[in-house]
Image (tube, rainbow, N blue to C red; front, side, top):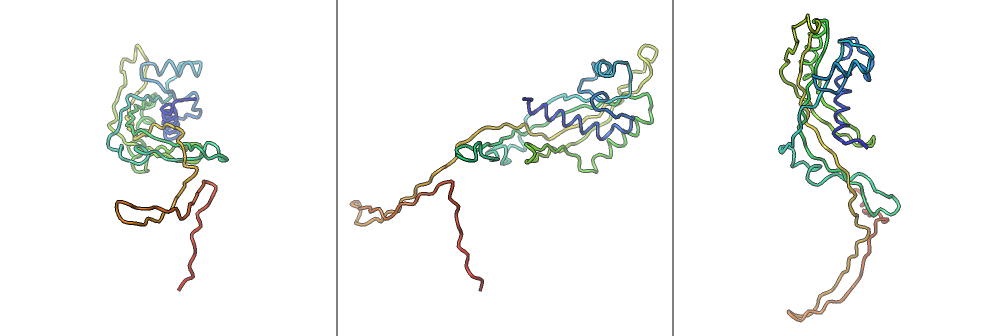
Length: 230
């Protein structure tokens, strides 16, 4: 099973490809975007495509750190109960607990066409207006939203074109308010026993008499009486 960080990395990679692929005429995510630092990106793309080519995107997670500002949220402190391990016995429930993180990525655009690069740059700058976030659905039921924020665009083109060829490279940072999820099983309360006593006498010589005993189990449903409307 993959780590949850890798799941977030894959989600960020897919989001970037969906957002920018059309500007460079890219169609295949498995060949046209790589999760790699800049120094090895061209080699990885060449291995995927079987040839040396430049029009592609690369992304890499440059750092991850704990986010104290979101530590007081309920999912970080107490966790979120999801579902029973066994719906018949109901003895344990799957609980999700998340660690708030700040995940920093770098995106590189590689192109021989400077205008394509500028179109993608404009889309990056305008991304802030379209509520940018990454939504991961755990088990297809529970949504986790991870908000994105942006920074300066940096030209990292190597203009030694006689040695390495003519192509343009731009780096764009992507900061994500992420969550690293962990799951564990917690015990559930299967039965509650409520004893009702009548206390008589004077202190300190009390006499307690058991009046009734109520047993509530997980299979019982609490029924709230309905009163007629006025």
